Amino acid sequence: MCVKRVPETGARITLTADAQAIDTSLLGFTISPHEECAVEEALRIVAEHGGSTTVLTLGPPGAAEQLQNAMAMGVQNAVLLETDGSDWNAEATAAALAEAIRAQPEPFDVLLFGNEAADTGDYQVGVRVAHELGLPCVTGIKGIAIEDGKLTARREAGGGWEIFELPLPAVVTVKEGINLPRYASLPGRLRAKKTPIARIEPQPRASALETIRLVVPPEQETHVKILGGGADAAPRVVEVLRDLGLVTS
Amino acid sequence: MILCLVDGDPVSLEALTFARGLGEVEALVFEETDVDGYTTRARRVVHPRLGDYAPAAWAQTVIELEPEVVVAPGTDRGQEVLAHVAARLGVALAANVVAVAADGDALQITRQRWGGSLLEEARLTGTPKLLTVAIHAVEPQPTGVATATEEFAPSLADEHFLVQVSGREQPTAGTVRLDTARVVVGGGRGVGSKEGFELLEELANLLGGAVGGSRVVTNLGWRPHSDQVGQTGARIAPDLYVACGISGAIQHIVGCKGAKRILVINKDEHAPIVARADWAVIGDLHEIVPAIVAELRKNGR
Picture: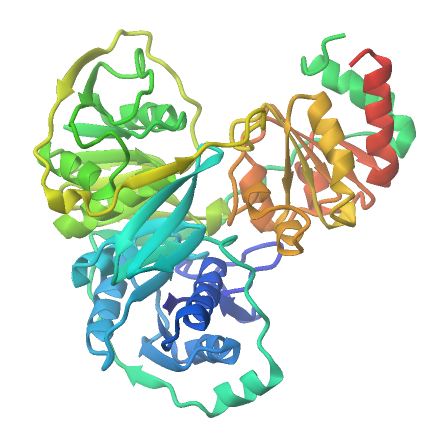
């Protein structure tokens, strides 16, 4: 599976002076939420069907921390595609990942991604990698079952579900909610620290989508009207509901 | 040609409205949606094998029309189809755009990062230019001019149907959908337990609305993940959002900022969500919500 290191933002995002990135000097980092579920899903698939798991990430040297987090959860192998820390565009990220995946010694059955990274939110790296590798792919998945060499994937649609069947190997991008990721155990953490991480230095390339600057949107603060404190405010709440046309009588 | 994908989700009309800002738009209608009045021209896609959604087949249909610009709604399908088009043609894709302006042959775009709590200004070049429109970034506005519709039969092959919807599970009858509900009653950590949500259910039922929850609540298993409002859950746009015991982390705010009005019930008057609210009641939701329910019942509902 492929994961991304993203900052853990608090209540407010602060930018660097050149407005090209988030100021992360005071922030910790984590695996992007959908991708943490991809790691958990991979571990569940292997627990049920056997096999092994490999996690890849493209990011700065510090992204080794996220690979170790995945290994602490139970992933066996880790590959770091090391960058200088700048944000890579989706095309370059996908090309580098596809090349690294092709170079893996073992063939794979399932390649998992998060549906979109929490920070850049490009919604496309998984699909691009699938095309580079010539594999079938489906996105936004919240349920996976594998049987007889076939993968069944479930996606939320219109309040219900739509179901896809894919031949293996296949690329699937998952969403939070597909599972509840486990916490890393202490022995897992110790083992992860000792496991070596394979390192690759990929080459960046330009995109036709060129970032100019980042902007923190102005806070849309409203003039809040306090209707009261406690249960005594109920009649005033109902008055508001009636004004909005939500109460008929 | 500026092409706008219509995927069956009502937010397609938002994308059509947005696309009109770039010039004359042709709607490419895959699933029955009434686009009349939203665009001058529409093509309804007809193909014997397109009875159900197939991402690569939809992408091929877009490619066959050789558009200069393609706009799609920021839905699962919109993002997925344009990602396929981008990968096939080796061009860029700008996801979740909120504003666009022509700049010679390029487009100046503003797009969402972090679910919209951060914006990126960027320049998009190349052909075709692909962009998805952030959900609830624009209000759907008809032009009032009737739409001329013709059928379009794309040339599709087996390879485009390798992945296609093969089955469907319908929602439970009578449930109100979170993403289209007129009223959403949301609960956070302050609700205290899975059982605590029964209070919110009762209020939502009386108002004909749906119940939602913060990420904390779905991670604790108090509500199913499909009820999550936030960056990793649903983007809602009700007339009224009632936020109970929710502090208002960025992750949650980006999911509910499409609400027209927000009523907050919270113990802490300094909680970040109070600053976003139209009305607030300060106090314990376990006393306030039953009191509102009783008051509504007293009024004959």
